[in-house]
Length: 265
Image (cartoon, rainbow, N blue to C red; front, top):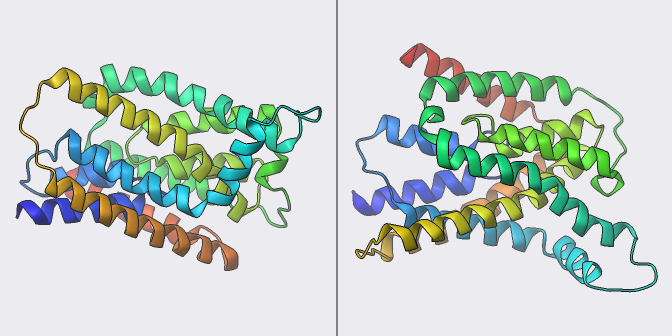
């Protein structure tokens, strides 16, 4: 049973992290529907390492160009790629600030199945209307500083369980008329500093918790599974968006929300 818990957590985290359906919401539901004990901070770190590795691998060409240009001090420094290193940092600040407050003071109040249910429905509907825009030709590289900041504030909404970090950032990008595939890519780029920040907080918790009993096998299994499933999930989403819209994810969100309300409300 112990090993199964790590496998399930790795699967859920990997599948849902970059889809607009809320990974944190699904992980909370695991606790609600099972009698499993909390997986522990090492497992949290493990699954985030797995999903971080997956998104870095998928976006490696974008990341390589952004990093190289960011540290290339040339006469033409203020070009699109140079600015994108700065823009991603700026877009991350609102979520980092609010995230620290939520992590320290509000997390226990938000970990509620009813909150997840309503968030899943409401933010799914908002994504539906944002995604109705047709003939979008704008790419994420075309976003200006103001638009990047707007999406950064959308990302703050992700701390509501069930809202989905990917979902709210994609919604913000679609409202700004960014193409679907490009909106998903930008959402994943924004996830990287957020995942790193989450890992940093978890590592700090380890040093302050004085936890001497470490089980590395389970978290290692969760890392591998979350990495593989996240990579498959990203390819799946991008393949869908190449041909159609976000409706499949929106329908899933609404069905999930209604089902949870019918059980717990």
